[in-house]
View 1 (tube, rainbow, N blue to C red):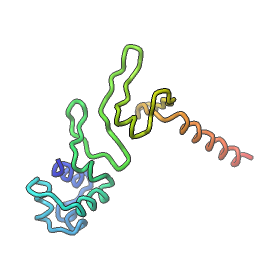
View 2 (cartoon, rainbow, N blue to C red):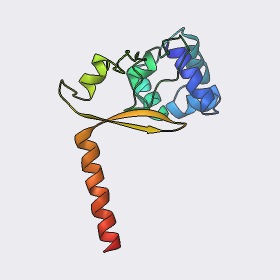
View 3 (cartoon, helix red, strand yellow):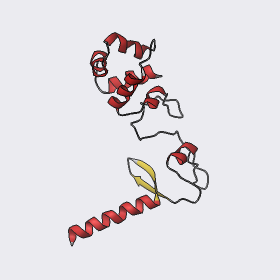
View 4 (cartoon, rainbow, N blue to C red):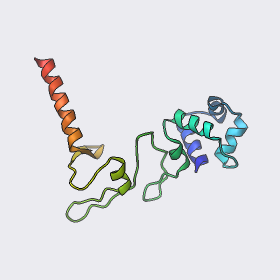
Length: 145
């Protein structure tokens, strides 16, 4: 999977193998072997690649696909794709366990459902949303006062 991710990220960034190899301090031939999967970079080079592409070493090593099997690029550091959920007849969804753990969500927590036409729907902890809203209101009051 590393090789496919490196190839996709390199192409997305409009770089040649030689240019990327130079950025991480190896020969083009060594880098080409990583993309082909005939060898793997050492830990330091993996860290350099992840930092360069703005992702994590774990994301470089994993396969990322939609539930329909469409290949995805490794997400940026701090961004996640956990798959899809199905809306029940009552409009309910189950948030994947790893997402609940990552954001410390537990039974009884309140979430705000946000949406933007053409962008989609997002969930945010109600406390965080309300705190941001209070900050914006305070700033607006200072600017108008």
